[in-house]
Length: 207
Length: 200
Image (cartoon, rainbow over all chains, first blue to last red; front, side, top):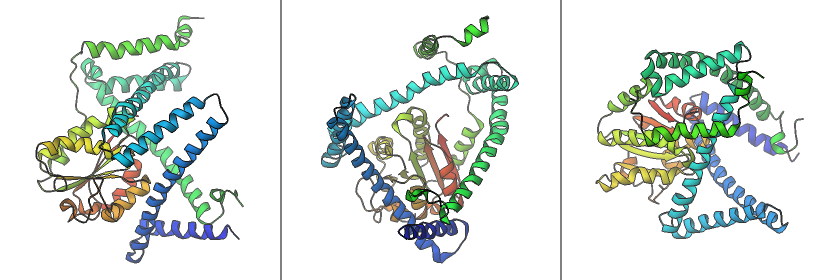
């Protein structure tokens, strides 16, 4: 019985938003907009909840004297320093600005840039000529790189044309196939949730 | 083991060194290769060039600082084009870094006399991802009662005639994630959509 109410709420909200998206019924526009605003509030609340959960987890890690507790301590200090400086001194304050620009921004960019090395290594391993399919991958990959990089156009003006054809015909055809099958799967999944067949979001599994 | 097998088992560190060299050499001694402009970029330029002074566009900054090196330059270039045409810009954001990035983008224009609240405004970050896009697309002022600087959106002159995405001349987004959610939520309003994405 305790599961019935959440299922009814999920079904009403889901069908309301679906109807608002697909049908032009003025009477449901207001309630649908209201529900979407609740979604924004819930998302903001979930962020706050996640932060509290994160702090709690890392305090427990420190309490247990885990071997990685120094990382937990750095995380808590960093999180609190950023939050306190931003909330009490304002996002224009020198301290918040320093944390944001000199630490967060630099680290974020550095970590993202490091993935380029893994990409280069992974590409090198993936581009192995083993069968006709891997040959197609190598040829299309090389043509794309030559077509998208300035050096390719300087070697031969046809490279960008071929690269665009691969991207707009071959790639789009493949992507659309994947997208359509994913969408069909999502529709089936959504219907299971909205009709209460799939109740895993309640933590009780399917019934 | 033949030559190609040996080549396939080359140590990662050698690949990394070659990669560093491939970055460093053009950085130290630029090759000076001309950069071609793609057809999509030309189309985006032309559609923005067709806007008239006083038109209002909405730009969603879905950029995180990790991917800013990739997406931010195109944002700066497009904003420069919009400002040169005296187009009004309403900034929204669905990434946590959005608010600060928008402040950085508009600062140079405030310094040369463009007015906050009139020529542009920063509505800031709205939590919820795709749901946030759907919410502000439908009703900007309801989704954003105040802007990032704490002003009530009811009193901002730039928002006097813009209540939803359909009141804007164009919707532009820059994202370090994907384009799908923007297209899904904005296309029903029948406004031109222009997007700039991270290379993936």
